[in-house]
Image 1: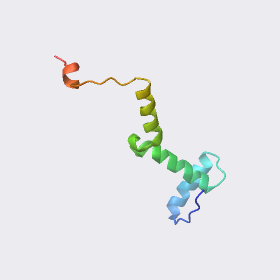
Image 2: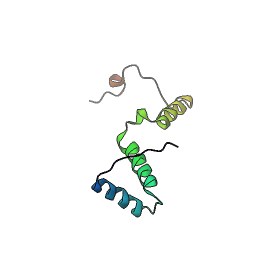
Image 3: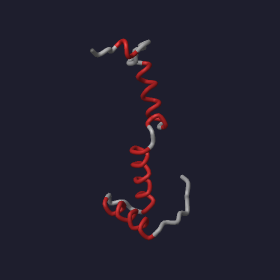
Image 4: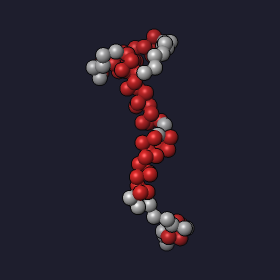
Amino acid sequence: MVKSIINLSERESRIVNMVKAKYGLKDKSQALSLILRRYEECELEPQLRPEFVKEIQEARERGKFVKIKNFSEEFKTE
């Protein structure tokens, strides 16, 4: 585990305290961890997350992907 000293504004500190209280967490460290996990889920692109890469690799192994040479011709709409 990495320890960090961070500077928060009064407002940012209040937000962390609200998250801590809302979820019944023991300390601000847990609140910040929750905030960061939520940020990762919402903001980071899926291709950057290791679990997404693993999911795609498993799908390939199970044969869930079909190769299509020309997608637009294969699914032409008239």
